[in-house]
Amino acid sequence: MKRVFITGASSGIGAALASFYARQGASLGLVGRRRDALLTLQASLPGQHKVYVLDVRDRSALHAAAADFLMQGPVDAVIASAGISAGTLTEEPDDYAVFEAIIATNLNATVATFEPFIASMKQRGQGRLVGIASVAAVRGLPGAGAYSASKAAVRAYCESLRVELAASGVRVVTLAPGFIATPMTAHNPYKMPFLMPVDRFAEQAVQAIGAGVSYKVIPWQMGWVAKLLRIVPDRLYDHFAATRKRKPRISS
Image (cartoon, rainbow, N blue to C red; front, side, top):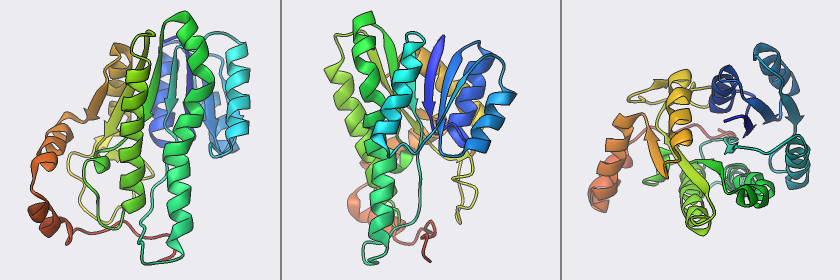
């Protein structure tokens, strides 16, 4: 991959993917909300890279950044890794705004990230569009309705897009992380089986993106967990999930 556009590059998975691609010699478009974090990342990477400070919920700003990056040459991969997570409860009126923010960031911004690049990729007959789902998309987690719903929607959206673009040469890749050691998971108040360092995740993710796989759970152990969760009867799942510790709400 020679040129890669990455949202959510300020930290976590996005920053780890940026570091991996930069070491491979790629030129990057780094998108995030935190200017200082992006500039620090940019300075730490080999090569020349562009920084775009914006909120991915601002579709116009995101499209302007994409247009600027495209002006400098064709783009090989677009990775929509911007994402947020928080505990939410439908019974709490204050959580509705949090629900909206999670859906807007995790789902709607993925669509807005891909939009500007599809025409040029189709014209070239190649490219990668990468969406970040989650193992949390497999079954609804208690206290995480917004996050589970947003990631399930990302998976379904990317599947639809993959079929739409099947004859174009453009590959749509859906990555489903398990528990990855990032700031997002640092304060989870529950056990996180098969917790993976973010740099190891990035290495495996880059391999999957390069291969153009349709869907991959990382790490592989969580892939088996996901398969088991799909076939567990609802009554059994409900019984055990109801007692699971929950991610804290922002307003709690």
